[in-house]
Length: 166
Image 1 (tube, rainbow, N blue to C red):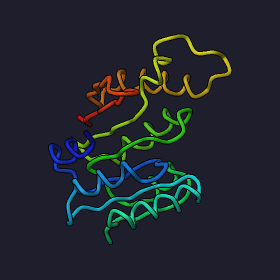
Image 2 (cartoon, rainbow, N blue to C red):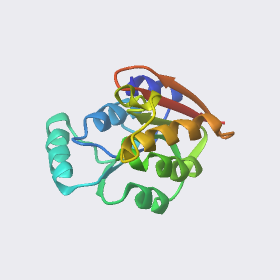
Image 3 (cartoon, rainbow, N blue to C red):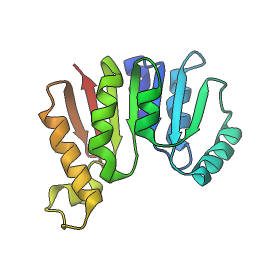
């Protein structure tokens, strides 16, 4: 699905916020082609090492930039606009991801977020101590209230929100 969105949108400059082992990155990068550029954030060094192994096995490209750190800070520090931003950070950080990503997205670009149904929890009242579910719920409210985005929530697996910047 990510490959299709890259191909249909013509995305060449991609920023991925969060990735466990780099699986989604491979599909995004392959779809962008040899002239595409991927910026990948990793939260933990162990994940980065696992991702590097997967990249080696699948043929990492010179244009892929794998960085460890805070996704929001890295995105803000990276100059320019992106054609596609893929969001899969810790779920309690989703509202902050939206606030950081939208200004860095070109008009017509896609902001895609994974896990937006959150095993159905997003449709039920969250427990007071469930910050992850609350984060997903707030994120969903924000994208549908935004005047800058045209959102669609796809009920595939754990839910994927695809937002086009207007």
